[in-house]
Image (cartoon, rainbow, N blue to C red):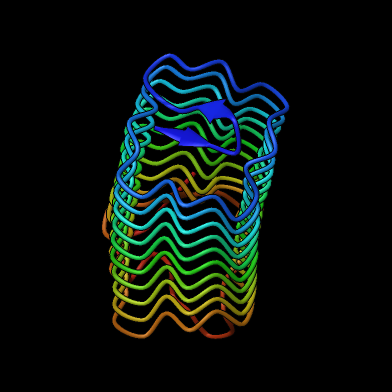
Length: 234
């Protein structure tokens, strides 16, 4: 495949390439080098980018629906408002990536590294983030409804005003997390770590806290009886 003189294929070297508005639907770019590449608004529907290096690339508004980005390096990548519906990102590295406003509905992010990622106002409903590292991630106002966050690391993450209704947070590490005014209706926080977490004003109707761990610095919604809900306060 060729686009504007660029040879597109597995292992392709496309560092700093201008691929804005490129039609790369179903392209095979496994292990390709796309460092700092311009892929603004590119069509990458069902593209295969397994193990590709997209660090510091720009993919604002790109369409990555059902794309395969397993083990890809997306560190520092700009994916604002990108469409990643149903995309697979198993063990992908998204350290400090910007996914503000991105659609990740049904995306597979099992064991992905999302440390310090920006997911402000992103849509992650039904996504699989089990075992993902979201340390200090910004998920303010994100839609995380029904999302699988089992054993995920959300230490010191910003989840203020996020919609976590029916989310699975079993054994998740939410220590020091900001959950102020978050929607946790029906969420499963069994055995979750909540020491130092701020749940002030959160909607926790129907949420499960059995075996969750908290401490004296945990802030709860007004009137919530942590001990009666099965929380272990130490």
